[in-house]
Every structure is written in structure tokens, then in C-alpha cells.
Image 1 (cartoon, rainbow, N blue to C red):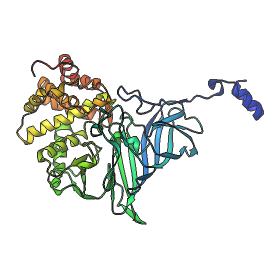
Image 2: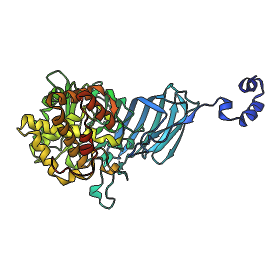
Image 3: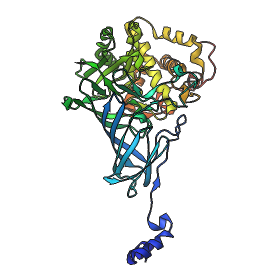
Image 4: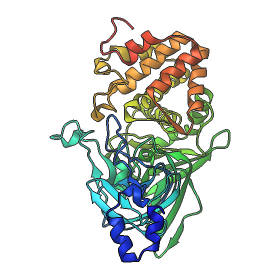
Length: 478
């Protein structure tokens, strides 16, 4: 008779005493806690192990007057190991309760790690549903890994939950999403989303994807329901609450376009925003089929955000009066190109950030070539001459603080231009389209990219990689 059969024949008290002296394996307990972090080379604590999220359903209520956010996050995931507990990344706010598969789960906080312990262990391969209820005033995050100078407030990158004059704006790159919802906060775990947001009736709540239904208003508050049916990395999720004017249109192929422009932004932005359908169609010609079910933009005053961000289907653009029209145009091209590169093809780790930014930057160069008679070689020469682009190799950022520095963008774009020169026009654009197709809605690394380019071109490009992608020193000549 084995131990577990023997236990069933004993009285409860005797059985408990016997099991107390058993090992986990002898008692039939298989689960172990999931890892509290992915081990990302630049942000090792971001993300978690032991499960893969399939879907987030967020139900939120926000009051701009008090700054209070009440939220429920329903997370559908699959266990990738036998799990006794698992972690979520969550910053600030108070967890008021949690369940796993409908039963109360213990919830413990340690810094930005929220650990849930289900009533019973989760078997490997099991799909489970975790629900976390929370409330509080979400915070703007300045992470030590992305903060270059802790003594200068103006140089601290602001992300997470940003309070605005008329509401709020949520930006997540690279760590900020955990400021307003618990998640597996790493680009390697992408999921679909449903986001329901209730705000005062005179305001709008704009997010990714498409509205599921016409906003409803009850008791002086309006509810907006957004859905994103294609997988999305957590850092690309956004929410803008405020007084926005909405404009809808379609691309030539019929893709829905929604632009939301804050009332504080001057109307002069309308001319450039009206070109989103054209830019999207141009992107399809150069990069292949558009990867999502809608496109558009969220435009906010410059005071609301320090930077633009390629939030999925609806990039955020901060604009001030008197902005140079060409600068706004190329910025928008950059963010539209990110929908293919960064959003659909997402990095396996934050060290692969150059794969996002090099393609978006090079898209600007191609756009200038196509629409403004500026050869890509001229853009390359200007980038080559700029010394800040040579601070480090684009594929080897020294730390998380440098993932948005000049080499990642401009030297990364130089890598793509050298590939174009090495393989020729036709093969280069076949590579660009093929790369976007091969990793559509998934993740890819630098090694994946270099292997793909060599396979598709039939060329050994070791010297190119060693010099332009990984080389520490600036070449003597371009």
C-alpha cells in the first residue's frame, strides 16, 4: 500500500500528523512558486515565470478630482509549470482582494511584486483565471534603471500614470504599466485585452484597439469599452482620460482610423493627422500587411508627456503650438512604423530594443526619400557624423538607462542602411517584409534577426555585424 492510499484509511488527525512529516513529493504536492522575474539582461525583475497570460480584462473607474482609481483585473493565463504560487508586477495602490478560479487566494506584497497563492496548486498546462481587486491613487514611476540623473527632475523619464490638467495619461515603456494594473510586465508575454473605463460624463477614456459599443452614460458617468484582439505587450497598453475631440476615417483599404486630440492641442495638428491613412498604406507597401485591426493616434499637450510612444494601434504624440510640420510628420511616420516593428514584432528582451527603434528610425529615412527628395544616404551621412550616435553599439546598451539613447535609434538605422547596401534594394525590402511576417504577433531577438538576414540574402555578413551592430569604435569611413 502506497503512502497516499494509507493516508485515506486513517483518521483525519492521524493522517495530518503523518503528512506533516512527509516531503512534498511523498505527499503528492508538485507545485513550486513561479519565478519573481524573467531574468531580462537589463531589467531582471520585470515579468514573472511559471505562466503565460492569454487575456487581460480590466474594469476601471477613475475620478480626476481625487485621483482615485478603482480597478479589477481579470487575468486568464496558462500554467507553464506546476504552480503553488505566482507573481504579478504591481506598483503602489492597495489590493483589496484576489481569487484564482473563483476561490479566495492569499495575496502578499513585497515592493513591486504581488504574489498570489491559489487555494490549490495549478497543474502545468492548466488554464486558470486570476482576479485582483485594487484601488488607490496610481503613481508616476521613475525607475532607478532608467533614471540617468536622480538630482535633476527634468531628466527623469516619466512613465506609469501621469496626471494631466483634465484627467490622466498612462504610458508604459519600459516598466510603467504596473502603475495602473497588475500584469506579467515583460514584452515576452503578450496577450489580448478588454479595457472598460468609467469616467465623469464630460470626459472621454481612450485606449487601444476598438470601441466595443457606443459609450453609455449613467448617473453622470460615462463608460467606454475597448477591445484589442491582437496580442499586445503590457508596455504598449495606454489609457488617456480627458477632454478630447474624436475624428474617425478609414484607410484606402478600409481599416478604421481613430484620432483623439486633446482640446488643449491647437487645431494645426489636424493637417498632419489627416495623413495617417496615407502613412499606413505606405507602411503596407514597404513593410507588408498592417498587423492590427485599427490605427490612429492620441494627441496630448507637450506638458502631459515628455516623449511620444508607439502605444499599439494608437500612438501617443505630445504636441505644442508652433511645432515644425516636417518634424511632426516624421515623428508620426516613426510611430506608425512601430506598429510593425516593436508592436507586432516585439523584442524578446529589452536588450533587443534596437530592433524596435532602428526600423522606426529608418522608416523616417525612407519616407524622406519618397516624399521629400532626401536620399537615405544623406540621412545616413548626417547620423554617421553625429558623435552621440557612437556612445555604444546599438545591440549592446550598457544598462536600462540607455535603451532610448541615440545609438539605439540612429546607429541602429545605420545598420539597416548598410544591410540595404550589402544585399541590394529588392532583397532588402523582401527581408523587411519577410521579417515582419515571420515574427508577426510574436517576439524576436538580435540573433534571430542576423540569422534571418543572412539566410534570406545568402550572404555572410559577419564583418557588417562586427563593425556596425556590435563594434565599439566608429569606423574610419562610412
